[in-house]
Amino acid sequence: MSSNFQSPEFFNHPQSKTKEAIGMPEDEGLDYLEKLQEGTERDLIAKSLAGVDNERAWKIREALLEENSNKDSLALSLAGLDSERVWEMREKLLKEGYGDSVAISLAGLDDERAWEMRERLIGEKINKDSLALSLTSLDSERAWEMREELLKEGYGDSVAISLAGLDDERAWEMRERLLKGMANPGSIARSLAGLNSEKAWKMREKTLRFGADRDQVAISLAGLDDERAWEMRSRLLEEGAEKNEVALGLAGLNSEKAWKMREMLLEKGAQKGSIAQGVFGIYCTNPKIILKHH
Image (cartoon, rainbow, N blue to C red):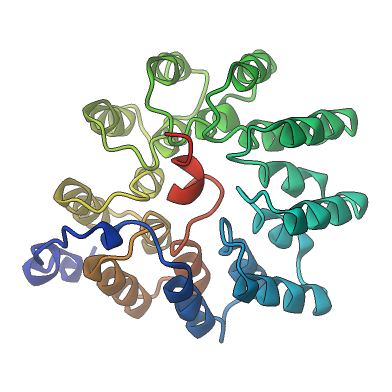
C-alpha cells in the first residue's frame, strides 16, 4: 500500500471542534453529489440520498424514475424517511415488486406504520436478510423479538448489521453471542457504525483478531471524526483496506479533513459511487438514521 496514505501533513491536520464537523448539511452534500454524477452510475447516486427528504433530493429521484433507473436503488434512497411522499413511493415500489429494498428502507423506523409494512412484507415472503436489515438501529422490544426469531433461522450476518448505532447492554450481549460463530466478524464490525464508546473500540480490535475484513472495520468508522478514528483509517489503509470501503466509512462527516480524504481517495482511484455513498451514508452508516433514537 502506498505510503501516500500516511502523509503526516494529512493525518495530523488540526481537527475541527465545531459541531458542523459531524452531520452533513443537506445542501452541501447534494452539491457534492451533483459534482459526482458525471461518470457515475445513476443508481449509485440514488442510494446516496438515504435520509435526505428535501426538494432537491426528490428532483434527483424523479429524474431517475423517468430514466427508468434501478428501482431497488430508489427504494434504498428512502431509508430512514417518514414523510407522506416517501410512503407513497414505498407503496408504488412495493406494488412493482421491489419488496426487499422497500424493507431495507424501513431502517430506523419504529412506528406503527413501519411495523405494519414489515408484517405485510413477511406475508409476501420477502428475503429475511432484508427484513433483518429493516431493524437497523431499532431498540424496541418488538425489534429485539424479531432479531431473536431471525437468529434462530440463521440470519446472523444481517441481524449483526442491524445493531448499527446501538450501544446498550442488550446490543453488546448479542454482539458477543454472534461472535461465537453465529455471524461473520466483519458483519459484527459493521454493527459498530457510529459508535465511539470504549466498548466499540475494543470490539473493532476484537473483530480484527477474529478475522474481520479490514474493509468492514473501515465502514464501521462512519460518523466518527475524532483523532482515534483517523488513526484507524490511516492504519487500515496501510494494511490494505480498499479505498472504496474507507470512503463509505466517511459517511456523515463534514470536516475539512473528511473532504480532503474524499478527494484524495478519488485521486487514488476510488469509485465515484463509493465516494457518493460515503457523503450522507446508506441505511446502516447514515448517522441521521442509525443515531436518531440515541
